[in-house]
Image (tube, rainbow, N blue to C red; front, side, top):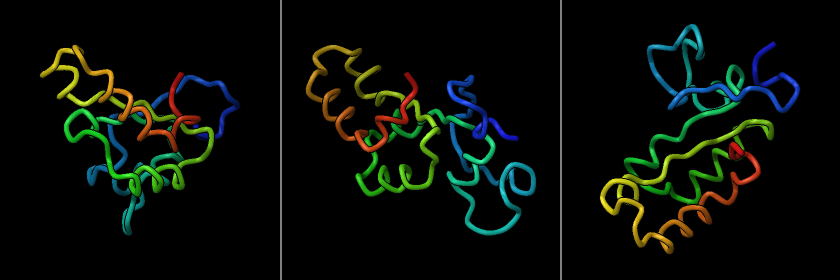
Length: 112
């Protein structure tokens, strides 16, 4: 049994990314296009680090993530560094609202 298969609400355990070539053959399949679906077979959550560096992903990317992960899977995204470090969380209401709205397809899967 993996964490993703445990009854909810479990301890949410994951890492800051779901694809790393060093994990091939152990966590991820040795060959093929490993991704979120393979990661979600082992872990039940992921920290979305990419949003800190690159901001909100494209809507198509978010929809693909929603399709690849089971409904029990949880996402926890970092706010973009532009908001947290450059603006120091000041006067970010509109940008914050767009960020949250953009992640809407994953809302029921976000860590609470």
